[in-house]
Length: 312
Length: 307
Image 1: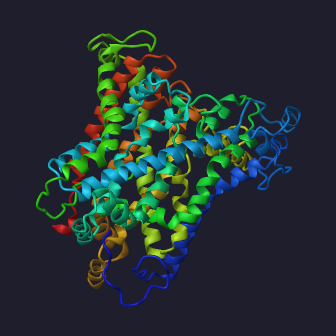
Image 2: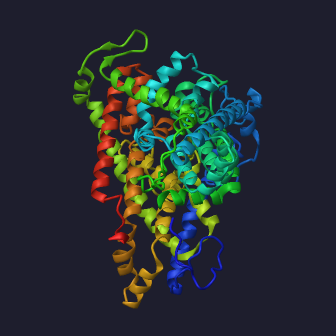
């Protein structure tokens, strides 16, 4: 992203540099009102999840307009974590299906960590070879890798399902993770740009000192791009956390069901007449809260990397 | 991920003299990636194309049927319906989302540099499709959902947002506008930040008004960013699946049976892998053509600033 010309007056607002243009008072009122409306429309559904999850599912039906939880209870959370007795679940108008979100949470954490760690580490190695090593055919091979970025995921889905089935890995952590563990064209592309920015005189000095490529990668190049490694790791973790179709096909036992898939199952088990909305929203929150936490901690990095992906 | 830098042309490294001996370390560094590319990408693509010419039900070995699947697709009313409803989804989704994001980006750029506000606006994009779909499925529920309860309370008729065949696809398109608005806004926002300030100063010296400035300066200078946004979001939009899978499941009466859902349905509820593979090839071809046409029409790789 190009940085705008140095501005004489220091911006009062932290963040990126350029000063705000002057606006008429009317314009300011209209503008800010619109922004506040968008923020409310963005946050309200999340509040409604919380309000619903903390309500008594049976009592809630008589007060659909109540802005606060109806007969507040943690019952819905206990229910989806498998901690509520059938009698209590029925008393609260909840689903009595077999739902184990505690197990799904653990599955999601393990699978997404497994994918992220391997994918980012191995993609970083590839990105290093594309950026800082000189070899014949490099640009051609890189271009072939980028093709993978353009083919829709749907297309490799069916054959990869067959492959994982033939490997005997259906309904296992490894079956869900394996196709994504070796590389991601997006991560290779992303990290290559930052490896290209590494000052070559560091590397040439290390070569003169007799350091091998592995040592140069580990001790010189990798530390320099570490901030970008952290950013892309967070983005990829969130991406796989939210993924639905692939884990739906490959992980169908309790021991391999991820949170998104568990939510889908819960939703389809819900009877047509009196759905367990409190339970569904409690499960949804369990899937969403880890992302909220990541956003609070790393929001600035995430915003920055999304913005810079648009403009180069 | 759906994010991809705008200029796909690789930034050239300085043409250094090729050093002997780096091919071997390069190969070692690339070995895992090459393995993954070959086994989980290249081979599946080849196998997918092969399967599209076969009849395969997962139980017995695939049997070669030539172009039969493709001929069947050409006269499959469910396929044509899926193309129509997918297109309907894409048009509503992309139009509303792009215009709303453009407006919001201009507003944010005009009034605030707050990272917190941008973080909040982006939040829905980071939450799972499935979660977003369920929240809106609940908010828009016919009997008990908040929206219909409010409509009822103020004396209006309830709306079958997900249950009415005429409305369901529009509802799903708008739910995904809600999820993607912040992402698209951030991309456009970054484009706005990249427009040099002196262009605006020149315009205001010339006495150009707000609307005039927006139309003659902001929009043309944003064109490369908008082109990138459109290529990425349109191709992503065509692959709508999660929201449909957890809400309408293709119904009512195929009104939301989009192409990816139809592929999933043929493959995993009817175990018709040959036919589903042929549908995938058709989808991939359509997406490739759309992306190419968009790149040509929008001249996505050129900036007006450089002319």
